[in-house]
Amino acid sequence: MTAPDISVILPTFNERENIQILIPKIESILKSHSFEIIIVDDNSPDKTWEIGEELKTSRKNLVILRRMEGKGLSSAVLAGMSLAQGKVFLVMDADLQHDETILPKLILPLLENKFDITVGTRYSIGGGTSNWSWFRKFFSLIATWIAKLFLSISITDPMSGFFGISRSYFLKTADQINPRGFKILLEFLHRSAFAPRILEIPFLFKNRQFGKTKLDGSVIRNYLIALLDLRFGKWISPTFLLYSLVGSFGVLVNLVGLLIGELLSFPEIQTSFRFLNPFYSSVLFGIELSILSNFTLNNYLTFYEKRYTGIRILQGLILFHLVCLLGLLIQISVFQFLYHKIFVYELQSSSLPIKLVSDSLAILAAMITNYFLNLNVTWKGSKD
Ligand code: GDD
Ligand code: MN
Image (cartoon, rainbow, N blue to C red; front, side):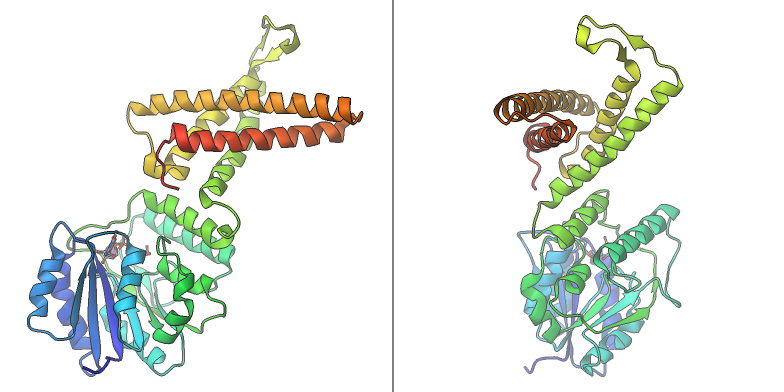
């Protein structure tokens, strides 16, 4: 069999009703072309792969890849691409949400070698989303906006899961792609050594009729991790970066807490340690507020996969407080050591800048130890 012009790649997870409808639709729209359809199913519990095998009995150009190991949208798409024979690959959702009638518009410009990537877009004139909830619309727009800003990608819908890519462009970029990455299109757009020629085609993103979305709360976390990885991954762990972002936000919360405490005239406290007196309880309030905010954000963002839920949140909170306390001790000890033992005693220099340098190093030390403690103790078993 000679290689087809087009390889349509359909990642599936629990789409048994949908693929039975979609395959004939694709066939009728592409009937004047030579094409193959590759279903990459991650061993769906609803046995989508079985329906695939049934459809295959009356077709020569249908390939079913039932992956027993590994799971995930990006890696499924990549697996499909590495099997694909066509000159052009077309990736679409198998759940009928992507409008198959624009397939020729996505495919022909690639076959004619006028473009390297074509994208079905919801956000340019003529495109749209059906009745999405305001939350989903809002999140999708923010996410798109951050991607554009962060990665200087100029297309209107870099998050789209509906796109075409020429085999030659795929071959040139394939070994740069992170298969655990979240958005495979972003990977292709961003990791390549040269700028691809991109064409956008608007379409209306339809509502699902059968089955349900696989995107859950981890999407937000994974998306931020993916962006940080795309942008800074060469140098530093994206989880650590996210953790640091949460920490920086915590500083803000800390100060706001102090402000609230002052405005509400929280009392001064006399402690039994002379050096602490008078102690402003608004400072303590700020600290506690930032600990709570850091815990919550880390629980639902940084370490989402290993998050505490229900009553266990209390356990997590206690551990987190202990780690924070340890951090405080580390910061104070390192500061005392650096400032008094090294700078003042050994180098005989003492000044405000020296204090600031000592404290910065102390904060860094505390932050790094805290990160590893949180990673390995508080949120034990987190994969990153
Ligand atoms: N093999 C495999 N493995 N397929 C998967 C997996 C997986 O782990 N997760 C999802 N899929 C398949 C689904 O069966 C479907 O065909 C397609 O990938 C899209 O998954 P949905 O769960 O329907 O995603 P969505 O509709 O919520 O999200 C769509 O819109 C996003 C933008 O808001 C997708 O097109 C995303 O790619 C897109 O970014
Ligand atoms: Mn969908």
